[in-house]
Image 1 (tube, rainbow over the protein chains, first blue to last red):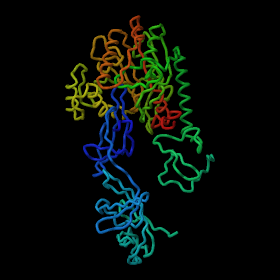
Image 2: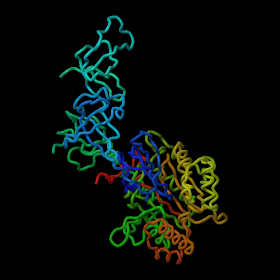
Image 3: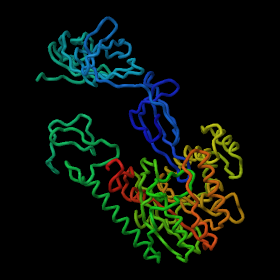
Image 4: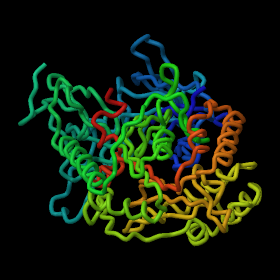
Length: 188
Length: 367
């Protein structure tokens, strides 16, 4: 069991059967009053944020939550297969858990996978991925006023809106949180 | 290990680097990442950064100003023991055990014995220790300024407090980017008025806990079922009153505390529901707590025994009674007023430091 002095960012606790992680906390102690820790928790399953005051002396139950660095291997229908490089253990995770960024995942992409009771519940991708453009119509000259974009297909099959100057064969940087083009990257 | 202070270029800085983090020059690896902490003196890879150094200087200057302040006013500086058999018996403070006793949570018991022994104006600047306290305004080891005046009332202590803070901070204290007017005299506000105005809760002091819980809930503030009187009070105070105090651009004296929060204060002669106690608030920082001291040995013993009972009931360590203090009260403590003021918080106000760790010479995380 944890008590209030164990509370820190990233602590994983079980409340009402759900796993939560601490995202913010503040020690409060009025001069002649009881001490407590004002704590913000994020539900690891739903992402919902709740605030609770944990009084000194109150106990928190540790959640059986584990965070592992894993590498994306390949897609298999609706599933994605990941491998823990430290022990070569493979895990299959549904596409739904990853959300819209699943089509930005290239083989060997390093990810962080959160397990609750040995079941994967969350996958965090790197914020940016670098992908090669495999198909895109050439931009039309003269049509460059404002923020004009065209669709481009990248090597993983995803379609991203890019500026007109992007050509097939170039590598672009994409934000996995927003699915948006960030910049063109010169090949080293 | 190489030490470089200027033109520091890290070829491969970690993407997440923030100022204040300690980075190894050769590898770019983050050596220490503790929120609020700064690289400490004596670390192998970096000299003391200038902001940290300037806060150490501000601390030394505040210490010198404080000593001169009390000496000029004819106070005697005293040093009472830090290791005692009986620490403060407050319900919400936990002492740290050491050797065959405890480290003090405040020097008040021994200082009161000095008052009973004939000292009239005394002050002390000393370390105090409180277990399990760590936050933006709390450290388990911190520095207290405590002073007492025999044959004086709380008004004299209010004046001292205003003048001391003004002497250390100047016309304005700093809280982050804000400036708080600390020129005397400060606004004075009673606890009941503040609770009525901002929390919409009428506090009497003699009502049963359940009644106060109901009143607090009617004001739309969450409080646990079966909460104690003081827990219900602080739920409303912290939710509604403290944010308003924090938003004021001037310092305030919050006085006339309801009797259940009297601690070691005397009650008003013609109003037993009110304790002669005040707290000083500057920009949301609770800076000091003052009492018109309880001198009645029987009432003092009764309050100590009650504190012991509550501590036992709540499963907290029960400390022995300080019989020598009680004996001193029997012999006679002159009517006196005294105050404890957090020195580290005063330095925060003088420098605008956002956390106590930044005004300590070494914070707990740096040891």
